[in-house]
Image 1: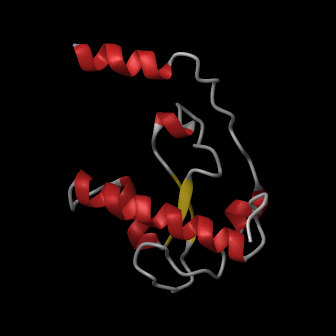
Image 2 (image 1 turned 180 degrees about the vertical axis):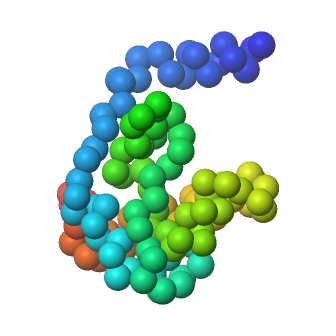
Length: 115
């Protein structure tokens, strides 16, 4: 019970999420390697997170900044996990980081003041 109260107090004052839509981000996965398994078999797409905190809701994909480059096999595993949630969460966190780095390398996104 205390944990629930703590979570509400952290969330209070947080602005409603902004949903980012960017064809440049989603289309940049074409021709890229999967950021989970490094496979580059031509099936890589931008995989949106299936989490409400990322903007996912009924009939709406998460924000285009909340996802990763995934091959068809890893995308399927993300949508229908067989390895267990802990293992999958670690892989997705790493994949999102690797995707952001690749988006910066490709010049699709920039970080103000970065060198």
